[in-house]
Length: 334
Image 1 (cartoon, rainbow, N blue to C red):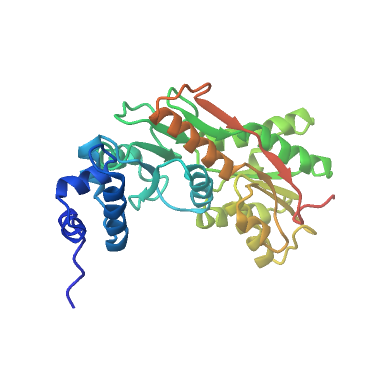
Image 2 (cartoon, rainbow, N blue to C red):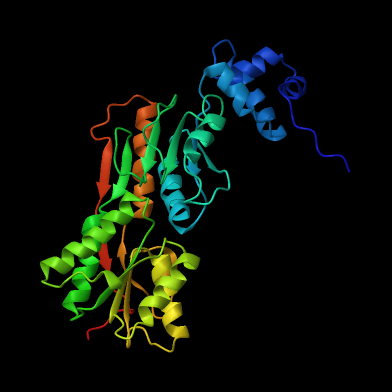
């Protein structure tokens, strides 16, 4: 069977009994068409399902009314962020295009430049870069970065208070009587990961507890990269009584590894994460974690970008949102 043919502007004109120029005026809301004719043409457009191409729309008006969300890959953080972006775009007159080149985070430096070169100019009016590796480029369209690798720069940015969140997580474990606290860090190339480790170290020092390098591992924010570091901590002769994992995915893997070793959570080891992705509430036991408002980060990033596109005055181009402790069942007092 041959694929269905796309509806063209000529098809609409023929069906409506008007000229192509009239259909074009209706599509672009230009003067010179009576109210009744415009209504008739719009009904035909809706009935036939005609959609002008993004490229054609851009060439006519120099605007596509499409915003691009560019990610290295879709994973729990970026998919949660998309929920907030979708909420913010409602009623704005803009459409959303989520784009990933299929790259793997950590091995695809500079991906945002390549993605933007493909989309900007004819397909999107602005872009939100999720955890970009580079934020010092000169872009031809408005761009907002969410949780960039190198932290805030001159580029408009939205992130969360990673340092305060990590301090809260570590102080919480200390308040439960834990002294030997392991840390599973994130990716070394991320500023947010560095801040979470700094928060861990700072809270220990403030409590008069020595920072023990043997209790610190790089887990890389991924299930597969967290497995071995978690196993190393949990099989130490004098294993930690609690582990702070710098993201929920690593924390969830730590719970799984502990179970495989015959250890109970929280009876034998307490585990706390960071992010509060939906999966964290579904573990057994449910994961205690630090909540960063990921959906709100997406919402703020979208509002900021739309203001920049519309050239609305922006009060602050760097927005940092607070984090908070979410107590569930994976931690207990020693």
